[in-house]
Image 1 (cartoon, rainbow, N blue to C red):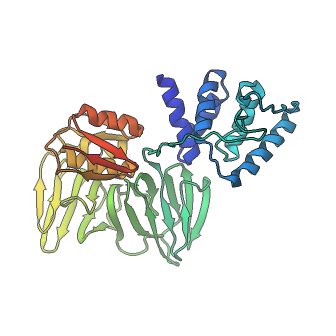
Image 2: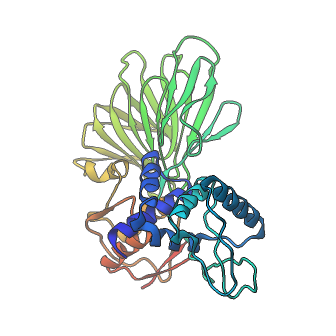
Length: 391
């Protein structure tokens, strides 16, 4: 497949799955209207056609509306030959309208159909696995939820004196003040394959990696700012020497005044790892504690182990859209990939002793990711959403 066709296919998949950003949606529409992508669009629509009877009337109704809108003479369907409607210039526009309407296909004549419209569907439809994207759910103080990836930009809700605003794909902000008033707690949760950023009421920013969460008050009205996190987050704290910032995670307390740090607290990791990027933080677990300097990491289990001079670029690579696997074990690398691609990792006969090198972009397709594994001499087979690692 040509590189430009592969890119167009990736945009098509993102469009149909609802994970395309605003810029990707605009780019896909521009490309889909170009004649050079006509053949590729035809093939993608054929592959994605769903054969359920319930969708047929929708597609047919859209087809007739398009015919009327374009003032084109309706094409008579003859059983003796197959007509690819997308070969006509006007139907390229019709196909886009079908996509906009949320229908992932077009109508065509099957010469085996005995004078009726049939549906072409591959007998073994591939199980599409997509890389992660901007996906998260917001849980409000009253327990109601908002799916952020499908919500429109702009004001979403009010919590006391605070307004919740979706700024763009993947970014949420809380605007208000810290005056006395009704204060509730909100939670933002990313699924596997999700990523999101939230600007807290005090101006601090939190980036959430896949399968992570942050719980926080809708206004910081007390003498301290306290949030609770799970999974992996990158935090950039707004400076306020009169109001310390505390992060609670798996029994660990992280205290800061104004700083930037990363916390990895996934339950499938051996320890909670807090890495300081800038500023100063104090980490406590029970009676054990440590004060970190930039470039240091605290590995916290029953005790606090201080690790100097860690690779900052590798630790925060996820926030920058990259997997950095330099000198990373196979097991550790696959734990990251499983969360981003939402796949289950199964080892057929134990974990092979393989060290990785290099890395890859997080927006690569599953095929590209598997090619990367092949390049690392990993033997595997993919069954649905299960990646089985072979000896």
